[in-house]
Image 1 (cartoon, rainbow over the protein chains, first blue to last red):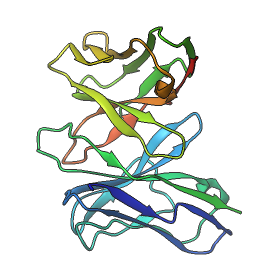
Image 2 (tube, each protein chain N blue to C red; image 1 turned 45 degrees about the vertical axis):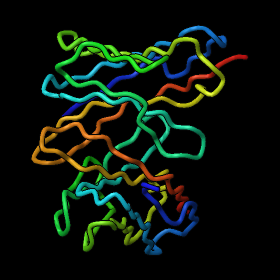
Image 3 (cartoon, one colour; image 1 turned 90 degrees about the horizontal axis):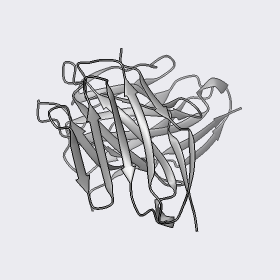
Image 4 (tube, helix red, strand yellow; image 1 turned 180 degrees about the vertical axis):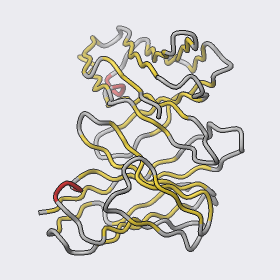
Length: 115
Length: 114
């Protein structure tokens, strides 16, 4: 089954304790992206990757890191989490054709609470 | 950058009636407009999309219209059913140097009243 998986699905942590949220897709997609969803703000892009070893900032990258060492995986790293990073996080992937507007497939989400 | 506004934020309709959700966007260069449905505890799932060279698209009970001049697009759901209850997001996409970034609206919580 074609899918995007995220782990963990739920996470409670404390300020300053480094954490990683994993994302994996089995569709051989080149493009992957991380979004955060907050009430009243919709989903906002954090980081994206156009292919292995190619990553760039989205709209809200502060406090986050990413890496893309393999095509299928795109982990999100919070080196020193703060309470304002409490949110619902989604990973997405797609296979761009170059003309734009390809369907993005979203993972099930990771709900993070930073105390 | 792109800004997408979505209205209403909540919408309740009787089962069998129609529902309409409207979005406006700011960047005239945006060329792709998907609609996502998010059910409780799940990630957004594409339900329909439209590209800037098309004015209307229909898929069974759902349809999307696009007015490029006015920079707005709408989702229409006819003959609503209880399983249509969810949060709906519109989005606008502008491919910029390979970044397929979606700019989302703030969402509409649709409730179908049996």
